[in-house]
Length: 108
Length: 118
Image 1 (cartoon, each protein chain N blue to C red):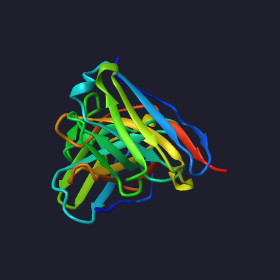
Image 2 (image 1 turned 45 degrees about the vertical axis):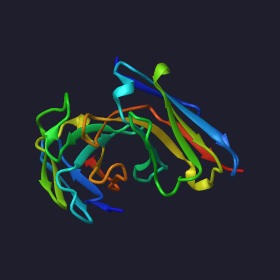
Image 3 (image 1 turned 90 degrees about the horizontal axis):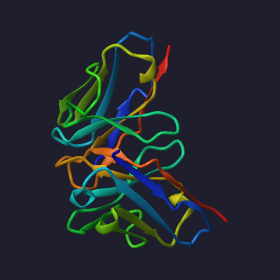
């Protein structure tokens, strides 16, 4: 099983600032990586797939990068609605996919 | 409107059974690979099971032999029959669709809660 590790566990950021979230895979997953946003009481929302492609309707302030084992989600200028939990997920070996433990982005 | 609506969760005793359902609308269900993903309180998301468009099925090691995924395309419905339930199966269960040829989940149900407790 590929283990996904996210860091940091919690990120404190002021509105308008940049947030950088990391995700590491225990072995290469190529570009088969997605990012999700989850707010309390809601289902996850797809932000990024293919490591760097924004899903439909996702604002341009969200960007993804990386390949292999190291990935980054960047939120260029945090808006109030962006404070949430963020998960990465690999889909390299169908369908035994795994998720990271999440990064909570909170208001500083 | 594109949506998935899950149902069927509840409180069940250890060793008991439950059948989850997921109703799809707004997209071509029969052309979509469908999955169940669960999330225990405060824990990471965990992939549970998948069914392809041809009816091929897949399970995580933790549920294999106890859970059965199925679909009824004529009713745009997905199911998860859960037998021999354990306390560790307690979680919010989401049905989800995989996007195109990727493994990313682009449509999620609202989740249905399963609690296994005596």
